[in-house]
Image 1 (cartoon, rainbow, N blue to C red):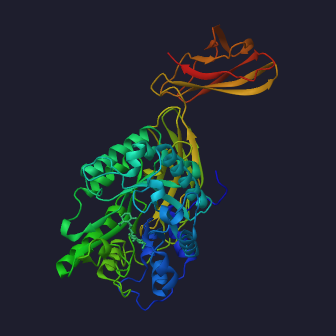
Image 2 (cartoon, helix red, strand yellow; image 1 turned 90 degrees about the vertical axis):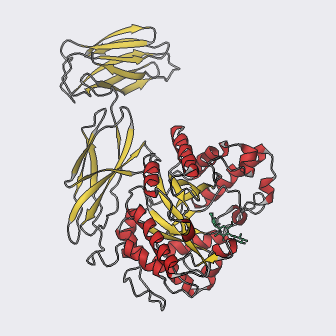
Image 3 (cartoon, protein in one colour; image 1 turned 180 degrees about the horizontal axis):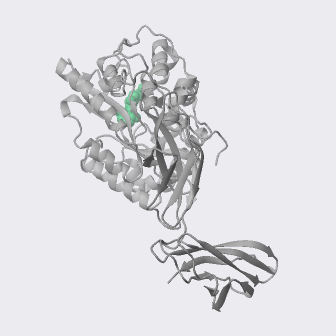
Length: 561
Ligand code: G2I
């Protein structure tokens, strides 16, 4: 784990934005909303971001001021792409990327890295490599670029692969795919995780916002990567929308199906272009599309936030690509906020919160107890708030590291019983508090829980062996804790485990041991077979082993017939 402050969750941005950022007055500041977008979004536990370009960031005060004032997340529009960061083999330049990250840090903004492996803006020297050299170049690029920011707490996520599908749901026949096959995708994610174990790793694409052949291909890929244990944490819906094509169908259902896979869903490159000249109907449609995307993010706990692909029509990719279209962003070319700005502010709750934008304090002292093979009970110390805490969200992530925290339940007290867990599995929990205005606290510290083995049911039990002492010629295992993990009393139990070759049991207590080959079977003694639901007992044994051997028994399993 790299040495650094643990990254802020989206929810903690509420506190960061309120505590650390002073709004400076701008002549172009919109009159419609008193609070900047970032304050409104943070009060909802979300980020609102923008893509930024290095040149106006360096040269235009109005650009810089709006970027800092209105957004709590930034993405480099071009500066982190391959042609900017590694134009020649093994010659890395981070000047533009570092400029953006420094700006973000100065303004309490989080950074999304864009993008590591893409078929565009990748230098020719990469595209012509042989398969083995291309794979080496890709892994080296990911390790170096992600590694450059791995200890920077602002840089929290990456687009690892970008736009790998064609419109029919096949893999795009890019030079990556043509040379390496689809395996480059899993390789890229593994390399990114190795370079920064804490970063959220995303796959990003356009025309995947609604349910269609392309988004279904994306869904199937994410599902398959997850089942293979490939580290993938998020899906980016770019959301380059256009009023003439309608709003994507079944967007809410699409968000939900990805969320059910246990990945975040981010809106990463939102803009809504119009065929020029724009009329009132088109502008109203555009306002509605912006509103719809914000609402879709607010409605899903899997969505940490929305990034707009720039903010001013002065700098938008749209006219370069679609010469007869434009006006896609939320400020005009003179930095005046457009009606789209107000639509977003309104969707984020401007003017509805009764003025309360103070989030509760984070819950403290989170602990887990009474863990069985299928459940655990959490308790914590209450949060405080300027009005009142109305409830707590319970978040859970699978495994001891990685994965995504998702809300699994709510509580109005300071405890929560979680159930339906898998046996012998590790989960991590966090809790956050809410108030009546919808303000969300930072998350509590994380507690890790490993469920017992033995599979629940009336007759379940688990066994955990502890090495009490060992020496060159032997060891003592004490206690082997036997727990009734079921819901009813048991009257006998049998523990089995594997003894390394050449080891001999020299003594045992509180159980009756028999040895067959390398398998040891320990049955309860006549006085400790009866255990109520959740109750434990223990036994122990001593073993002689060759003096050169440091092996220990393994594979403890318990049965309670
Ligand atoms: O095409 C829109 C976006 C689609 N998804 C991935 C994004 O990375 C992509 O962004 C755009 C940037 O907004 C443009 O600014 O990607 C383009 C490249 O494909 C960017 O355009 C490039 C121009 O093609 C270059 O000629 C120019 O030198 O921007 C460069 C820097 O201004």
